[in-house]
Amino acid sequence: MKKLPVEIEDYIDVINNCYYVDKTMIIKEILSMPPTSVILFTRPRRFGKSLTLSIIKTFFDKMHLTRY
Image 1 (cartoon, helix red, strand yellow):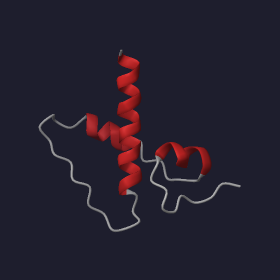
Image 2: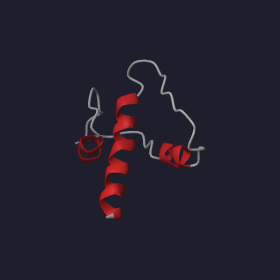
Image 3: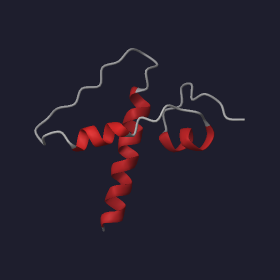
Image 4: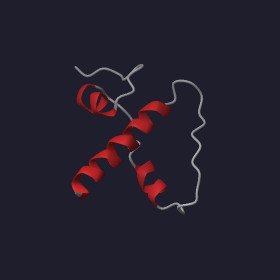
């Protein structure tokens, strides 16, 4: 039985072992922004900021590996 991702901040661990709300569409929003944009993640505690940043990091790490 999968658990809720309480205090788990690693995207790979969450997708393999937990239920979570898919936030991958934020990558599309980031890529559609002008390159001079600044992104500020401000949310209350336990709102998924670290997990969202882990999703973004995992995406761009894998993208970097597949380019070369």
